[in-house]
Image: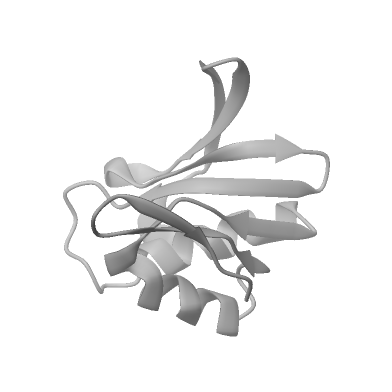
Length: 110
């Protein structure tokens, strides 16, 4: 996990809400809404890094101890297998809304 470097937490205004951004080296970021021990994760990006080398999972392992519950919402259909795997590994608790191709939002409970 040292390849991600230090984790830096920042905040910014997202609409009428305050979003929390966890930044790591090489453009890896996790963005969501923090409320006490709950985190509503909206974006995990690995920047221009190659997929499938474990950066997303490594970032989640660093954020996981900060929260009792992590829910993921606005999941891109293509990323659903990744998030299912992260739920099975205990890095997230809930999978929420999925953005299916055609821009239809559906709620799934997992």
